[in-house]
Image 1 (cartoon, rainbow, N blue to C red):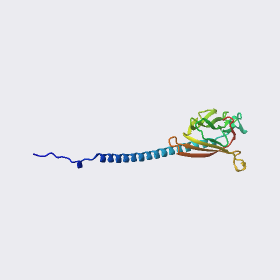
Image 2: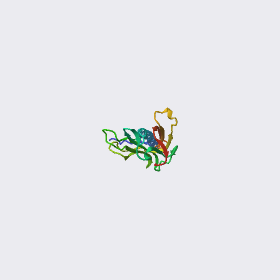
Image 3: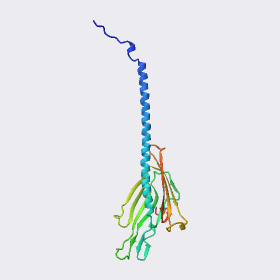
Image 4: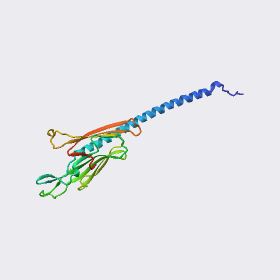
Length: 228
């Protein structure tokens, strides 16, 4: 007759050993979780920086191109080029010089300017037409830095309207108008510069920020406030 096999206390884990093993496992999992969260935060910050930088650079480059088009309304005829219309769309209007905005939660206008394609009259073989006048407007709206272009007069089918978010999370905006006084150095009658610097802040990681800036020329007079 076979005898039943018995287990001694040496063949099983004690309660103390189980507790120690559980503690070691918890510490290991906690360390792995902390490491995972660290890499996740690094990846999220990196993605935000890359996306924000790309969006700001594209938006600011487009704004620079728009500022290069700033001009007064004019009519081309056989006698040459002459101004058209009232005095309103002949200046670049700005919020201040210099102007700094750190509370980007309030809607704030920054720049307003006009771009014009010349009209024509008294030119043989061409119909008379008024100039195409467009308005460019830069503002902080709904906690975003937004540029939009709309039509004042003319045929809107020639050039499309624009509404573009330059920065989703502006933290600080610095604006300056730099006048050029020595006209002998220039090939045009007037050329001034808009200097715009934007500092964006990550909404999830406030210590993570991106700074971009442009310096864009324009060729009309400028005025603080006014029609802004």
